[in-house]
Length: 111
Length: 114
Image 1 (cartoon, each protein chain N blue to C red):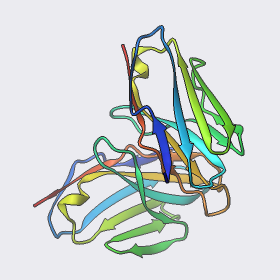
Image 2 (cartoon, rainbow over the protein chains, first blue to last red; image 1 turned 180 degrees about the horizontal axis):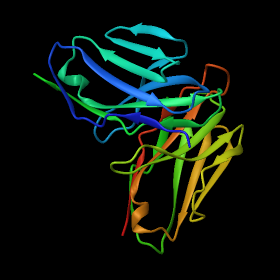
Image 3 (cartoon, chains in turn red, cyan; image 1 turned 45 degrees about the vertical axis):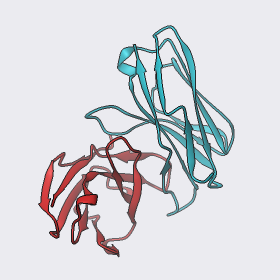
Image 4 (spheres, helix red, strand yellow; image 1 turned 90 degrees about the vertical axis):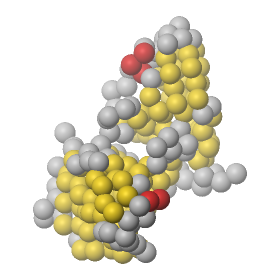
């Protein structure tokens, strides 16, 4: 059974702080990793993808992957109230089409 | 239009009704998906179509029947649903290929079964 785990939160951070979101996965053969943002009442929106160990930066977002530890994280620098949403971690094994999603972490950025 | 379009946005149906959800993607992708999102539960994959052929069916009850006439259109036919089927149904598409599989979602259909 492939599983993706996330802390459901809510995670509260003050405006301007760094928000750190974590995800672990059970399938060691997983190859592709994604972070989606979902605002309340809306559909998930892709914000980051990462395929190799290490860090990948895109604006205020940094994804970190450690395949040995089966761990992927998302850092949001200079958090804004508009970043308040649920963040979904998704894992895809062997370039197939079976994306497995975690339950999501609800982030609240306080003004 | 661009992206992935789903209709209707909201649907209320009785347990004896038959209805269909429609999805259309304008991204030139070759794979389409149906996901179910219930409160407090992770997104659940229901069906995957790759080049119009169904490649995944995650033990979904037969009261849900998918149809994919071409790579741009996907339907989910619903009949004799149960109240526990009330959820957000999301359509997504992707371009099959190594390191290019990224899901793009439609706005979803919020389904209520009475």
